[in-house]
Image (tube, rainbow, N blue to C red; front, side, top):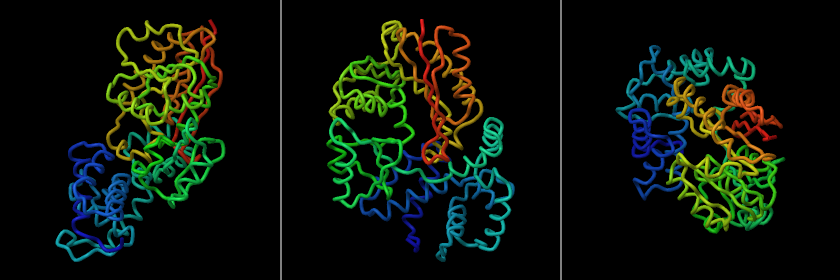
Length: 400
């Protein structure tokens, strides 16, 4: 869409205001906006969503170009105009775009490219912690990857179908996918699109789940008829994958502090034909009730989410050092407390979607230092430069 249409541009502006002025999450704000006008077609909706996410991703870069002082820019139309100029799209003769100087924009853009925090559009604190923990060379490389658009990856539900069959069914509807290396149950969409209204989704033949997240269940070394506890289950993407790998035989206890997420998990399990998952709200007695019961304990702990910024670009502007400091305390509390649920000979799998060592291997080391009845088995770090979300996963065995 090369010609700009006022109602669509206004929709972008309104959504950005919701995100930056009112603190809404980008995905929820976009979802809300797209419900507002049933006359919008797929191209219109794509224009709104793409421009919102691009501008959120490049917010600091655009803000620097708008103003050297970078004082919390609130002229959303001017920022939108800068974004379009950089995309080489001609601006219409609208009152909102009066005074836009294309030459000045391009000049300031060149200035911004010389300073990493502007070029890569990140807050100062994030640039500092990333370079300190990962080193300048790795951080520079990963920043470039984190600013790319995330691919849409499907996890084939092997309880109901297989990758070859699903690929064929999708291809018959002109939905192209491709397979990737080590990810046996994954199909990647060639073209980003929403598949939640197609029959294959409603029949539970697949779930949307990033490829890195799909590494966790195979890493757990799961067998049929095990007792598996997913103690930070959320809406259950990993619980469902575990169930498929257990061939729907055994017992999975999926726990979370939020009931609404477990309700969503039940719906997904029903859709996918999974009947070995029992959901449980975490309360003060949960750990004691399940002490020494799990063959496998998955702790996909709360984290900074820095590995998934390409999927949630607004997190850059909502996170801060205080939050990261607090979440590290939570991580250590969870692994220390919940580890009681694994039986002798059983395995804890600690996971985050962060790329910071202080949330990952350093947390595992702190736990092992204090708990000599556990030993380190192996871990895996996945960086965004490998193509998908940044992730960390470690295997810890209870030896006595």
